[in-house]
Image (cartoon, rainbow, N blue to C red; front, side, top):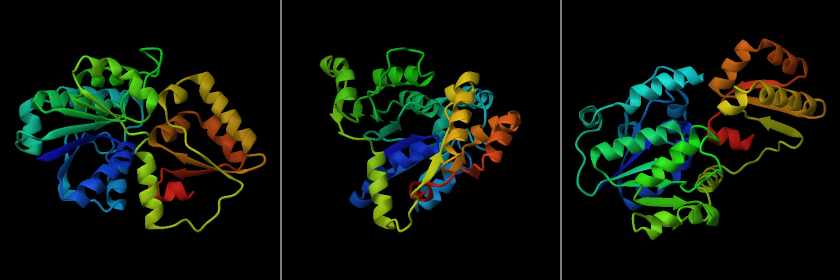
Length: 279
């Protein structure tokens, strides 16, 4: 039996890492299919975790991390229409008893779930059951959540509220719901802190990380974010860790960038998880 895990972003890899760690401990065969959403940071994080490259296959490869909604849309449509034969050519034949795993609610989650259906493999959804009250908020995450819930055989829900949201699927006998009680990010945090205990203090500092499309692409929200950061910088050291889409935003909104630079905000590239949590 092989556990196939479909991932697109470094954030998904960070939250799936405890499963890979446990699979190694138990001698369970696993493979990761990278959907190519993050061509740079995903592999930086992979190498920092010490994961072997031979365990990963890339499909829909890109040359850089996606920086805009337009780039994301182009990548998505190329990836979602991959045929069964092209997936098989990339990963090799799957076997009866194999399982396909996806995480969360990103576009790569939806793509991975579609691949599982094309391959005829049962689907496990990690961090399942999260819901909002609107189909289009957040968009497109909420749509992904609801679609994947219809297809999954196993739902791993991080707490009582998401577990209750999946009750209709359990009652219909279509799938199994497992309450994991908390998010797998907590397991990753513990594993990393055990690896190298924190020795430095960041008292008095503020770390900023803004990367959601609905905040960056909404003019009023974005201006609110910039104003708040500027206000905080009056009394605190502010370190702004930028995702590629945030860097792209500042490249077209130089006024906001210059405003925060004048406020002595420190800008830096996105950090690997181990360094980021120590900040």
